[in-house]
Length: 606
Image (cartoon, rainbow, N blue to C red):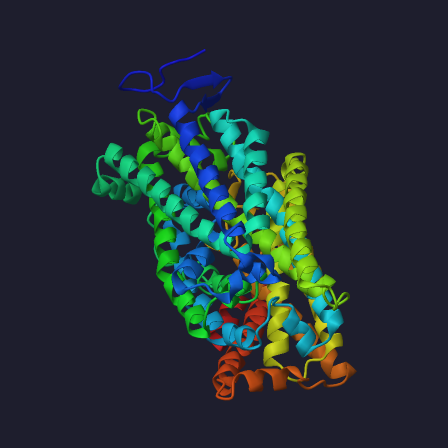
């Protein structure tokens, strides 16, 4: 049954159906055409590079022949973790809780400056293909395999969810065929990744980034116009208490404060832009080290723009609906669906623009998934296969690499199916990405900045960090599921630019004390807490089992860089290491001493 739900104008070209309480809108032919063009263009780029010559017939197709310039590397860095989850999550976050989330942008400066001048020089001068090769040079093969296995686990779990979640939201709001969308994206992405390699992935990232910007800008411009202008949007946001001030509360149990976003976010950024293979691979594909460093500087303002777009879209949503959200009215069932409902509502009389936003949404998914495929194929080839088959011919290695990318694509589709039957556990699957990134960051920091750390300390530290991460993460999830709360839960995207970390969080801080208070730790501190755990445990175990100074990796690094910045690096990370220890100390003290008077005395003493 079709009904005119709109206050003015004729029945929109995007048709509307009411099914019970849930409102479902449908695409027009123009919308389907625009969405199809996205898939065709992405596949076309992959096919172009697949047949572009002999350069694609060696395993260097996984590294884009190390010939990429600064601009495509920068936009690919941006697109890799600007997923559909982020596009849906950030506006919902701002609509519900206000602009406090914007302070996350304060973490971008150090979160990109440190990788540019510390991690990139090490990886680039060693001419690595896999970031985990460094772990073997620094420690031994066991540590390398542990790091690789952890990364593979992280990405395999994650990529199915990031493919399924936007398709599920799209299906719920528009009736768009769920598995049709999943299969179309998965197969197209697998095609251009397996055939075209990293070069195809990066150039499609550039195209998809443009589509993402266009889709978000279109929603903001049209929505702002319909709301009465930007001044009216701002006025309603102020009256609705959605413009947040600077919250300097040091309590790590508070969900969002300046410290959790601006400081905790630095460690999340380091885990993604410093040591994540998907990003490291892009640095290493640059023509020169200078261009790799410049890509970090170029992506910084782009990240700020994307963050501002997400916040602004949330404010425009609030200006349109106020406190009467589509979720409260029962038009949608989750916050993720609310953004799509808003888009379909805004574009109800503009056929083609809903298709543009959906293209924007799935561009985010495609860029993230293709990066996962390529990085997984690279680490599997470099870390698990080549060491055991050193005499493999280049042609066989290239064929196997493309087969691995294809295989991971099929695994992604299988994980999407598993995600479809996970139900309430879907949010826990998202959290895994964030929980694993921190320990991997700690492992690399342990190797780079503590010369006395040994392989035993590295392995024990990594395992301890993972155990701590899953203990807190899963414990927090179970506690929230078992305790009813008056405030509705929110799918809050932890980092809209890189991590795609989505976790169910409460609006209020739990009052539990002692060990249980760890379960209320802000998700923005997970990376800092878990990486600090790896470093602390790794150093203690190394001291107990015998000091192990730098091995032959030092000779590799010095030979690659006679005028290296080792002194500057040491000074910078002496400070960073001290800060990490300070963070973990503060977390435990503030958690264990919940009495306000004790906490105040401690802070004054400090």
